[in-house]
Image 1 (cartoon, helix red, strand yellow):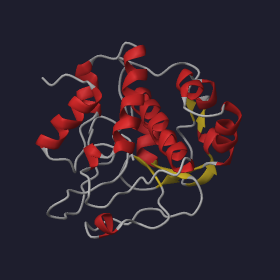
Image 2 (cartoon, helix red, strand yellow; image 1 turned 180 degrees about the vertical axis):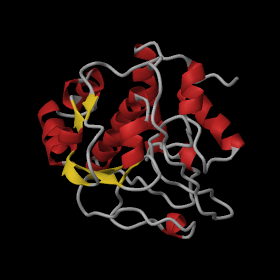
Image 3 (tube, one colour; image 1 turned 45 degrees about the vertical axis):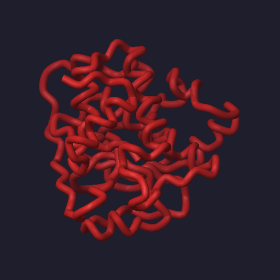
Length: 222
């Protein structure tokens, strides 16, 4: 799950995964309102409905224009089936701090033991914190949603998103693939590694694993 992220200035992904060893309650800041112009805005076709109230909505009503972006056309699989899945997927806007993740059918034990309860659903639902949707930089939202929808497609291909403590978060094949997909799009748009390094930092990942994630997706360390 993405990312998602320990970026105080604004995002990732992305999802919730506590450390493999000593469980702890994750710390998720409220995203503060943005000020000034964005250095790297998302493509103009992507127009998230930032003022959306808490609740569950069709995915493409909240993340408007997603289906017209270049990454959407690059997702692996049949184009018509991908559009069908997108139209059937929901976005749940949740009050409180956080970022974005795919709702599991049941909260994984390693997440529950860390003191965090996820939104659960048997259906395809991407959960986004209301403050993230309202206030994060558009590039962060853009990279997060293409990452999380990649996870939805992985699940439709029979992939398991949660592998327990068998793999560290940064080593899960599904995470590496989804992050690499988002990073490739960021690079296409001219986003530099200094931005991506901050974007890829997550609150629950130790420094050594964070550096490993950078290597996995080809982002240079400082």
